[in-house]
View 1 (cartoon, rainbow, N blue to C red):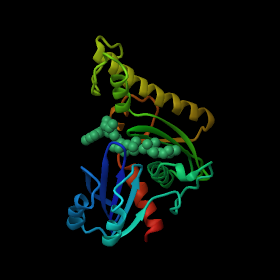
View 2 (cartoon, protein in one colour):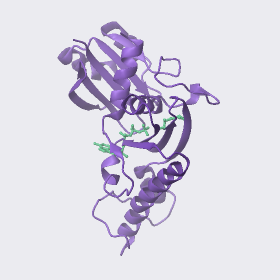
View 3 (cartoon, helix red, strand yellow):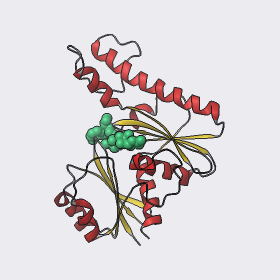
View 4 (cartoon, helix red, strand yellow):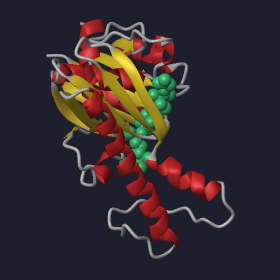
Length: 242
Ligand SMILES: Nc1ncnc2c1ncn2[C@@H]1O[C@H](COP(=O)(O)OP(=O)(O)OP(=O)(O)O)[C@@H](O)[C@H]1O
Ligand SMILES: CC(C)(CO)[C@@H](O)C(=O)NCCC(=O)O
């Protein structure tokens, strides 16, 4: 039974999951991407396989280190995928988007898929029923919005997200929370509606670190799965790294 280490290096967090066959047995975040930080995980779980999705300039020594200890695959546009990428420059697509789309297609193979990632940035990823990833949209994520208003003004404080805020903010903090959180929810719902107008049989999936803030605010029916990206990585690993 293979044990697979799936790694997802995003701009905010470095995350990982250990699969025993297809079951998730461990979920963790890493403080950095040096081999010495990952070594204890290899020692504890002894993964036979490993796949990395990275959208950052990760530690250059890491792929060689992981290749020494596991059957390793670095996800890229050149990987075998359950989707095709018939768009301008496939090499520029974030690996995390390829993983999310692969998971959506494996779960809902007959439908139009809109897979949404709520991380440092929001990504909207559209895959048609022929399993062609045609792109979508990228917009600022939740913390980026809070930070941008703080960093680009003289007086706005840095505010944390909170699920308990009024629609009509009554002070600076709640005005900022309403603006960011209601604004994002309306953006996400609005984009879903626009896709639905084009594709009646649309399956919407949402994942990413900020999904918990939004799943209750969205009016559209959506499939929420915090491990969607990792499920995509496991699937891609099986295709490339049997
Ligand atoms: N323990 C945590 N530490 C930091 N952020 C967290 C944590 N838990 C949830 N979050 C939220 O998750 C968001 C980051 O989501 P995620 O980890 O999916 O992004 P990422 O993969 O690093 O980014 P991207 O792929 O867009 O570059 C943060 O903006 C934050 O609001
Ligand atoms: C948009 C992010 C930052 C989301 O993690 C990542 O997917 C990325 O760096 N993408 C590269 C550009 C693109 O996907 O078209």
